[in-house]
Length: 281
Image (cartoon, rainbow, N blue to C red):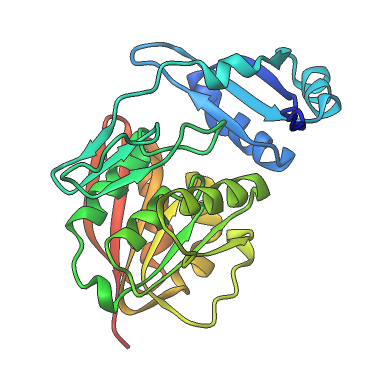
């Protein structure tokens, strides 16, 4: 009789707190400093939003509870494995993102991006706008892509799927980098994307990129404007997302000083995406 080792999944602890929508940016900055996977849940026409942070260390979750209030709980395994899969996400007629393993290949180009703890799978407006722009982009075989704040890796993997000649993706969160690398293995037989952990405010890019994507909070976009703009090749493009309408002008001001020309503004609900080109030297 064969013996099988029992696989015990690591426990996951969740900290959660409801906050007013007007305090989102303040709390987001606080959680960035904590360096734990976290997610924001917003509902249309609701004045409060839900913040959640996840960790395998009970002490970290308890520390968040002591310092910031809210609730701490153990996440049941069934919450991750027995929930009903979300329907596929279609981006125009060019891309379909599925959250459960597809039973058969569909007519559209397809990516399998499971719903993770906090890293995003394309549903949020800020990511959806970037995905839509990627489906309209051309000249992939001549384009090197840099994805800043990659999260689940969905943008970087879309660029690879469409044929980018080179893809590099970074995130401050080591768990996000690990998850993104796993997502590449779900979709492609061999690795190609270069996944890195890094802080956008400390970017030191030697080879400029024809297309740079940054889906990051507005405050960080403004603080790191010189570093982010410096990654764009002459004549290349920079697409910025994660921007609320009321923050748009601050971001525009920060990047107009970086030898960039604003090409297009795209909005979805209260969110804005800015597409820039770098002036040729």
